Amino acid sequence: MIKTDILIVGAGPVGLFTVFEAGLLKLKCHIVDILPQVGGQLSEIYPKKPIYDIPGYPSVLAGDLVDNLMEQIAPFKPTFTLGEKADEIKKIDDKLYQMTTDRGTVIQAPVIAIAGGLGCFTPRKPPIEGIEHYEPNGVDYMVRDPEKYRDKTLVIAGGGDSALDWTIELCDIAKKISLVHRRASFRGALDSVDKVMALAQAGKIDLITEAQAVGLKGDSGLSHVTVKTKHDTDPKDIQADYFIPLFGLTPKLGPIAEWGLNISRGAIEVNTEDYSTNVPGIYAIGDINTYPGKLKLILCGFHEGTLMVQSAFKYIYPDQKLSFKYTTVSGVNAFE
Amino acid sequence: MDDNTIQLTIIDREDVEHSIEAPTDMNFNVMEIAKASDLPVEGTCGGMALCASCHCYVMTDHQLTDPTEDEEDMLDQAFFVEENSRLGCQIKISKTIDGLVVKLAPVD
Image 1 (tube, rainbow over the protein chains, first blue to last red):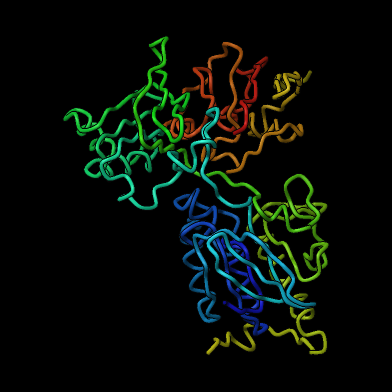
Image 2 (cartoon, chains in turn brown, yellow; image 1 turned 45 degrees about the horizontal axis):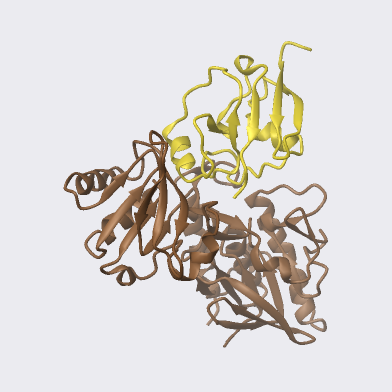
């Protein structure tokens, strides 16, 4: 079990910077994020894009901002649970929450700061009727263990980097792979496009372009994927042990919606004095919160996290006096 | 109507038509106009063609600029994609699209 002062949900820029402001008040932080890497949207959606409205940086690449934040918070030794979804919270006593992730990690803290951005990034599920029925036995939205597919027949759908990369990677493991893609051409990273084309020409994979997977069949588990191409009127059934749709990730609010917080249009309502929610000890900062005048900007999230930790300190230590200090005067005192 | 305004029609997912005036001199795009009109368009990535949450169908035969590779790549990751699919964020509000009709694509 992990114990900390502030449990931060979300390792985006706002969650990360909050570690710094908490550290100045000698509060320890642990961060949980569903993505396998830190940085949230900045790493997942636009790492190579410039941001122009971070004060003091005329321009900074999103990925570089994340790297800089990690360097800035390093003295305060944050700990991380990455690749796991913050799932359930329960109250242990008056001033202690316990969170369990979807993979069973247990974390206790008096304060929870939700910096969840747009929600948890979850795989996009194609709108194929009955797809849920095959989920436990034949549909995978991500590849966790390539060995699972040894000597199996696969239908992979999608045209992005991950569809191409996994087609190449699984080509020698699986018995047969059909790759189904919407267009005649691919974008992806150029190298992987060439490789996939070569595999198709060599007859090692079946490349089905200008096509979409439209149906799934099978009595107990999956047996066939129905694929419709643009030029054929009749859809075709392709034998498959596994259907692997790879259409990227999309943010969903997820389990946070079940935590008893006041939610308005997909965002958590907060008091702008300290970004507290309606539940004592739970705060919401960054893109996930809403209040009159809210702007979804990284710089606003930094401000919110800064005020929030002041309130969190008073909540955890109501009898202690909190004296405000400038970093220029007192420096950054790293944790042992 | 003044010179810097055009008329757009956005058909929502309940097939309700919304007639909207949009300014051409403020560098807006269709996604931003839809959001500003309180229509249910997420615009998750803020207009960088990095998500597909503003996916829509162009219902009129306006000559739009061809989709960029970035836009095609995102449409590859969208569902219910048709020949007339576009990302709203990549359609700039300009004189040439006066009278444009778009229909919001279903959400997944």
